[in-house]
Length: 216
Image (cartoon, rainbow, N blue to C red):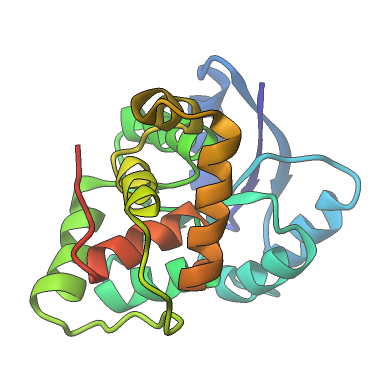
């Protein structure tokens, strides 16, 4: 069961999303909040796997909440909900450690897909977001990501990185490479250390920026 938290100050949107999520098998909302401060208080008592986080909220907005979540609850995954889709906004959120980004006018099926993808692979980018990231990071070079100066990636690390970009789970990558899931996790941790990325979403951004991105 995927345990969800929802933080959004717009009551109509929040209640509508709650109704949609009630029909999603294998997941349930265990925490409902109107701002980041309320979310952080709730997480002290309620275990959550994924937070659906609005960017624009009173008291504590989504960006400040992201900072606090990474410090206090690093294992909690975050899908940002926003009406904005600018390349700079998306890139900044990924650097803060967001696992996914979704527009507020997304179709119900995409919400289901995003939650399951983040639960299984650690990240979710819609086609629109992926195209924006690729345009900004790879083609236009208008958005320059910030990564550590790293040692060259080994061939095995590149294979794991490409598997992550193809939205494969650890078990799927292990099966494809004929290694154990623990070996895949070892290489993934090395990738995080080498690149300075915070999570799988950050690794995808790194792959996009450095020509290693191979989509499905």
